[in-house]
Length: 260
Image (tube, rainbow, N blue to C red; front, side, top):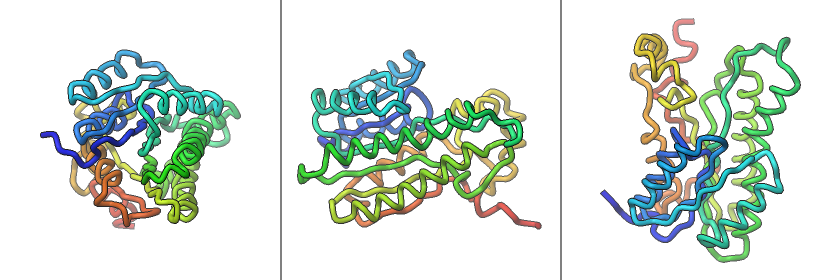
């Protein structure tokens, strides 16, 4: 059912060709926003997102984006402004997962690729968003998609864990810097969500059943459950929420350390 919590907003959702980004972009359109959507290589996926946005009667701008390149990020934001208007909502969702390699075997290239994608990229997008909306008199909202691994480290996840912890701290710093500028900055920390990042669990029920045993609710989350939180954080109802982490994990974080 369509409503209007985000009517006439201009939203950017990075990495919206699948999973959480796709679900969030579609949910924003359902709530009345025009949406700029980005992808790295999955052209078919981003076209499905575009079609779903336009089916809601909203505009979609599709761009391929290398968010590790600040020049490319700047050009993307200029295209958003020229096509849809000044962006008022930014969701930094695009990122890459842990590769399972321990620090002693981790290459400089793999470390750099993860940090640049998961931390530098959102930084470049936040900076451009702030520069573009500052002085317009519009309310702004930034939502960073982090992970429960900002708090729960995992072996083989050093670069991923560091990038998500860094993004959480970027969120809180921006919240302090931007509160008087009428820009809310918060992050969502998903637990196990059934997206392509969890392909094994999606494809193999036995793998999924084994993995969810550490989740008190005994199930993985759905991308739409993250999207609904993003809609709320972007809406008028969340204007007094600033610098917060909303953990959406079926109580996974609370379970860690039990029985020790």
